[in-house]
Amino acid sequence: MLLVNLTEIPGREFDLLGVVKGNSIIKKSSLGNQLPVYFGNIFKRDKTEYYEMIANSVITGRKDPLPESNTQADEETMKKARQAATDNMIKEAEALGADAIISVKYETTGAIEGKIEVLTYGTAVRLK
Image (cartoon, rainbow, N blue to C red; front, side, top):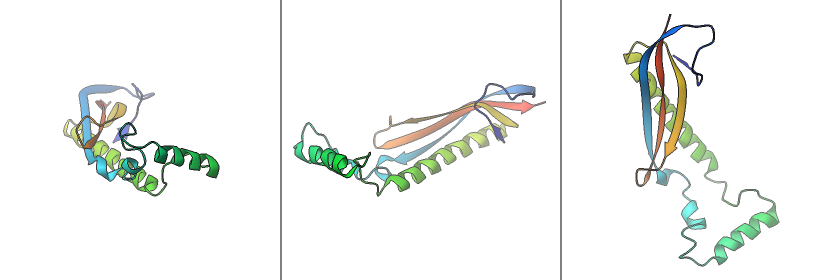
């Protein structure tokens, strides 16, 4: 299945089959487990810990004051979520007899309490 974020496939003609979509939902708790510890709600907590963290990042030269321990795991989790959403979209396009999906877009939202949704969508087409 050919996926492009263009509205056309250069040099190819096609028939439009319709909009296709796929999604994947992951728990927020599987991402950034350290964030509540470091940021929490700074309006309800003593700001001293927050300021110490920022000062420490300046002293050590770290650009990101957050711990690095979960960064790679978070990236891998989001990569898997995007791939699952893409696979779901492809299945929908294949059911329509599509050869390609044009205008592919990705969105991420936290609209569902405690969860993150990765949504991908595009236009299924049959190449001529």
